[in-house]
Length: 176
Image 1 (cartoon, helix red, strand yellow):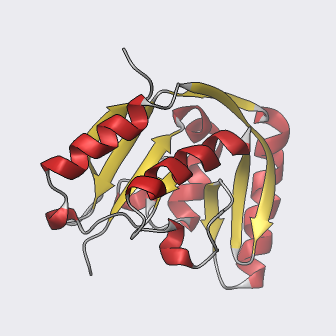
Image 2 (spheres, rainbow, N blue to C red):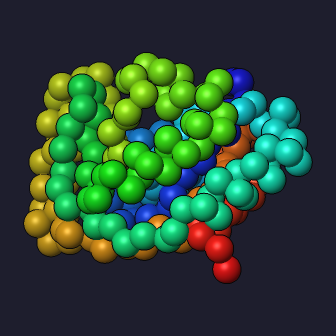
């Protein structure tokens, strides 16, 4: 396995409603990645991240004020069930700010263009029957829980250089 890193915003408020589904249908959940909305993946190979990168990230995130958001609906991409955050524009702006500083790391390696859709992955599978099962299990949770309110105040830098995913650094949004 190649070591990878990610910048993300944890959404602990979602765990009680989707944690079990994530553990069964999103492999990174069992590897230590919390319920989250990705800011940038993949980021730099962990052993290449240096003090200058960390200082640059600190500055990028200091220039973005904390913001409130809600997970408002369940939706799908091909092979994926996710919860959609609003305002999505706040997450897109955050990703664009990081990419402006680190243009060699486009979101998802450029697979979805420059403007990827912010989302909280619940589960994924190439098997349509499994996707249908995820959706059927997710529906009652959504009815009971949505909207899920949260506030983005910290961006986590996580990596899997030593096996499971771990937090290597946290960055505050805004200036203290």
